[in-house]
Amino acid sequence: MNATLETIWKRKSIRKYKPDPIPEEHLHLILEAARRAPTGSNRQNWCMVVVSEAGMRQKTAEACDSQMWMADAAIILCLVTLPGEGKVNGTIVLDHAILAATSLGYGTCWIGAYDEAKVKEVLGIPADHGIICLTPLGVPAEQPAARPRKTPAQLFMLDQFGSPLDYSL
Ligand SMILES: Cc1cc2nc3c(=O)[nH]c(=O)nc-3n(C[C@H](O)[C@H](O)[C@H](O)COP(=O)(O)O)c2cc1C
Image 1 (cartoon, rainbow, N blue to C red):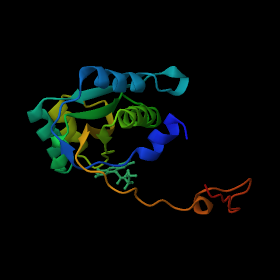
Image 2: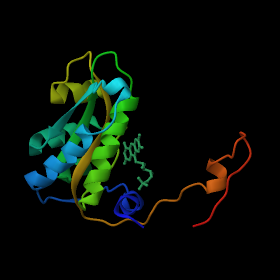
Image 3: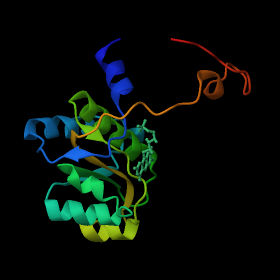
């Protein structure tokens, strides 16, 4: 298996973090992976708040349904969409960041449970911008087992809807 597939296989939601910092060169590689993500018509209609200060991380975690374990990670990333834009592009951007982080050994967890108004207030995001998702980004303090997935035949269809495509690896 190549490194890209290994990274995709390796990614899991991490909900326990060590307080260790992330070296700047690693953070910049992760952000650069996000910057290189494709967007429709290359609109690049997103921006990202990198939350590093401990008090800000606490407040951000509170705004995310009080998932306080998020604040233990060195950083929280918050993916923001520009006014009037949809969510597809930003989702791809955050996935690029998450996979880059995984490849460097860091833990992440998609966070979709948040109070949008509260997150905006904490991070100073203008009201006309949207939020896609957040993720903590830090050194994992757990190695959970892979969570189950549906079988290939439940997910894939060949040529016709309802005609299962199956395989085994
Ligand atoms: C859009 C989205 C929103 C999510 N929101 C949360 C969340 O708010 N809190 C949380 O603990 N996990 C959240 N998750 C993580 C999922 O629970 C997790 O990805 C799923 O159970 C599969 O586990 P895995 O990521 O380890 O493969 C979210 C995942 C996605 C894709």
